[in-house]
Image (cartoon, rainbow, N blue to C red; front, side, top):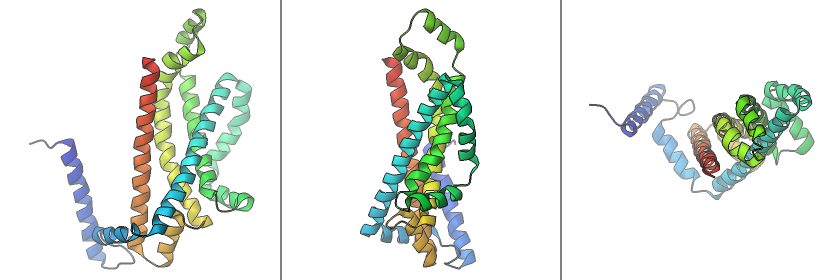
Length: 250
C-alpha cells in the first residue's frame, strides 16, 4: 500500500524524533544533547516570556528589512549591469568580494562603523545582494534575443516586454535566488547578533543559552529560527508566483 505524501512526511519526522530521543537517552548528558520532549518544554517556557516575543520581533524586522533592501538593490544593479557593460565590469570585483569575504569580517567592520543595533540588517543585506544580483543577471542574459528583436521591430512597449518576455524568463532565477538568499540572510543575521550581542534579539537569546549551558533552550531557539525562515520562504515564493502570474495575465 502506497502512503500519501503527507503520511510519508509525518513518518519521516517521527523517525527522526525517535532517533533523536534514543540518542539523547544513550548519551544521557543534558549539556551535550537533550531529547525532543525537553526541547519542547524549554520552548513552552520561552514563549511565555515577553522578552522572547520582543527578541523575535526585533530580529525579524531587521533581517526582513535587510533582505528586502538587498533584493531590491541586487535586482536593480543587475538590470543596470545588463544594460551597461561598463557598470557590469565595474561591479564585478565588488560582487566577487561580497561573495568571498567571510561574514565575520563584515560583522567586525560594521561593529566599528555602526555599532551593534542594526548589525543583522546590514549583514542580511550584504549576504542577499550578490545572490539576487547574479541570479537576476543570469536570467536577463539568458533572455531569448530573437524575442527581443521581434519586440523592437513591432515597437512593443517596455511594460509589455517586461510582462511577456522578461518576467517568464526571470521567474525561475528569482525563485532560486529568493529561496537561497532568505535562508542565508537568517543564518548570517542571527550569527552576526551572536557576535555583536545587541540586546533583546534572537542572537542574544542563543548566546545566553550557551552561557547558561542550557542546551534545551539553545535547540528551542534554533527550531524557532528554522521555522520563521521556512515560513518566510513559503510566503515570498507564494507572493512572487502570484505577481508573475498576474503580470502574464495582464
